[in-house]
Length: 236
Image (tube, rainbow, N blue to C red):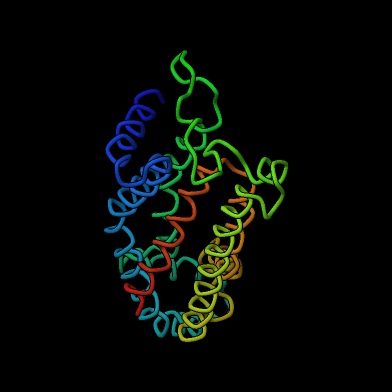
C-alpha cells in the first residue's frame, strides 16, 4: 500500500500547480479515469454481449416451446446456446468486479493513519474544506450539512442522484425494449435477480458515498459518472 500511496502523492504533486489544496482529490479523479479507461474494452464487450443476448431471444423462445414439459432439459439447452454463441448472461458485471481492487486500495489508504510505518500524509489533503480521510458523519459533526465540509458532500450527493436517475431511466427503457421472457431467470441462474435489482443499483451509491472516506467516495462518484456516459455512448 505504501507504493500506491507514493504514486498518489507524486501525482498530487504534479497537479498541485493547477488544483492547489485539492490536488490529491484531482489525482484520485484522474486515477479513477485511468482505471476506467483500462476497463473500457471489457465494457465494449459487455455491450456487444447485451446485443447478442437480445438476438438470442427468438431462439430461446423456440427452445421454451420445444421443451415446455422438461425444465431441466430447457435449462441445459439455454446454457448450451449461450456457450455456443459465446455469450455470458452476467458479462456486464465484469467491469464492476474488476474495479474492486482499486476501490479497496483507496479505502484502506485513507482509512489508516500510518502507511509503511510512517504517518499517512495523504490524510492532510482535502477537497475544498472536506478532508479526504473524513466521512459524511465527520462533516455533520463539524458545521452540519450546510457547513463548509457538508456542502462538499451535498454537491456529491446531488451529482450521484442525478446520475442514478439518468441511469435508472435508461435501464428501464432498455429493459422495456428488450424484455427477458418470464422463466429465463430459472434457465440462466442468477439472471432473474440481476434484472430485478439492476435498475435500482445506482441509488445505493448514495449510501456508499455517505459511509466511506471521501477519497474512496470520489472514486465511486467518478466511476459512476463515467459508467453513465459510457453506457449512453455504447448502448445508444
